Image 1 (cartoon, rainbow, N blue to C red):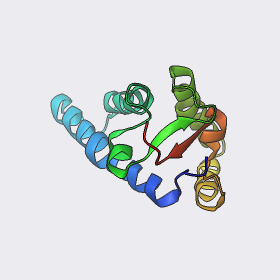
Image 2 (cartoon, rainbow, N blue to C red):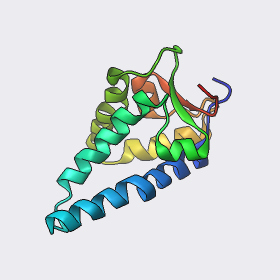
Image 3 (cartoon, helix red, strand yellow):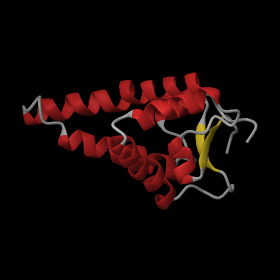
Length: 133
């Protein structure tokens, strides 16, 4: 796990995912429905993107692929739906229940821990690496 990736690469990968995937999805569905305030459908698609794409694309999302990083399991096994559900939904619940404080703590963990693992990495048994599949 000595090739784990720190805060800035992860941050920019997330930013690229928003810029390339999330924002266009929101704009497209807002334009199609004519409802610029209700983003339920695009939110569901974004969650499915974050959940499924890393499973079928060796831990990559579009942003992570551009940044040359990917999600992997600590035990070396292939990512599965259970792992990504833990990483996405269970961690999301933790972040909501702590009113965002958990998210801030996670950012500090990624920036300051030697292994760069966040709360959602610990919950799911994952880390982010620059190692190729």
